[in-house]
Image (cartoon, rainbow, N blue to C red):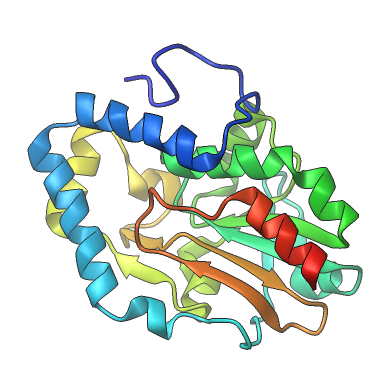
Length: 229
């Protein structure tokens, strides 16, 4: 299946708003993914929304927990080191197997200079292994650190972690999405996609948390927030 578009495209060249890119990907899913599978995915999203997870996740005004994670090149990245130099934009994503995660990170990659210009740095955090993050950064020409959050330890501190239900696990397996291999554990846990802006004092001034993995904030919205603060 071609997730990216009906024709192959070069990584990083799609300049359309995310909502337009995602609408195309949803059309492909409607075309290629069985209705029964789509219904299960939709049910899981609805249950996560009803569970109150979003209300329990860290929000604007909270303080971000400190972390120390390996990037896609195996280097140790400490949040304290990053915040000693600039603000930080953090994108929590599910993994390189998710077409919507790929779309978001490619779009963020395109505005990296704008983020840096506004006195911030960009990192993306997922439970996938360092090797998987390396493959993703290389394949999609990403120019910012992809951090491997083994066991979702940092995502858990942000209140973002849930366990993939059994029936959805079965769909993933049939689709050759091997989370135990990708994440290096048998937990079948993932983070809800979320984007945060952390000020140098650790305070969160922007938070977008949505169990709907097909909905992500527009990169331009992040830049506008950085300009305004």
